[in-house]
Image (cartoon, rainbow, N blue to C red; front, side, top):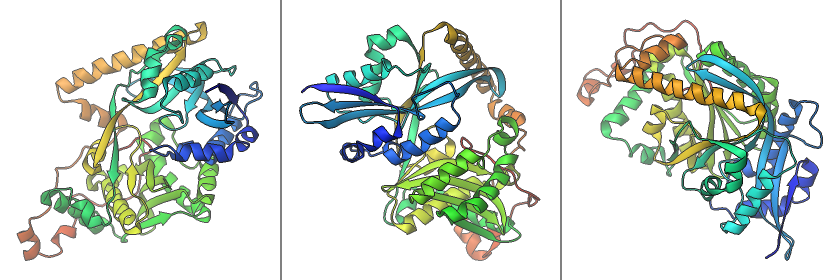
Length: 438
């Protein structure tokens, strides 16, 4: 076969190949929402809004395409979003440096590429040689056993022109397979764990003065109220206080509105009456629920509202009957280990272009990671890591774990499980954001 590669940087160019692109995407065993042209266009539009005015000929994207000249069809594609990004180098929560970087971020955790090594090599060559100014390629959640990772590691051009950064290390990517009913899903837990989870729900419900409510949000007209309440939670979290993260900025609102118009949005709020306690922002497409951003009020931390919300969310997804999988996304946490049913190992890969402008950012980043790793090992040796983390985040120390009553005790004293332990009910709500564990 004879191949030709093209770099597309405009939405109109993608529209011309929409039909063949979708056919190529549907041939993949694992279809990804982030490979949908509509999704790429929405994200690229927001990238273009925030790009430096000096970049021309781009609309927030760089899409490498591989075309079969003999048949005139699309064989593979590598879609990237172009972003003006601030590379923040930290040791713990202390910022050591912040460097402006132009980066290309791969849409999804892999590209749309055939299995043949010649085709994949041609696609990689097109990406690396593109006449598009970027200083870094970022690929999040790249499966450890993928052809793309093997190709990146073996490519002479990558070694010659880029620093290969995988300092974050291998982490499990966790998923939940959803059966036909919630009871069938709960069967994966031991009887004791099932009782403990149900008791957490009862205990939080008993602590809420105005009654527990779970609110599902899917429509565009519901978004303003949802984001306003989620922002109340997010602003009080350590991410909001220390990192300035928000869920109700204009960029987020515009994207979620576009997602809602296409039927992808599914958010959840856990409320005490009308007061928000925890939230989840997610997207549902082709049977997979993408668990994108989460937050809970640390004032309710002893009641584990994030865990309760996830429990109720899974019950709602099972009752709905549409999702078959919940995807927790990148990163690992104890709650993901508890609720997931399977996982695979993944890496975040950064290819940093070897240039004079990138020497200081890359060396600073590597030094911060090495220093942070030494600090973590030292804290772990004396079992202080969790205490220091809470101190830096200004989170209250957890109360003693409250066990679910035995079946005999529940039968003897019905309703006792719903009453809160000695902790007083929080007066007002705070939160967490994307990376926070419930």
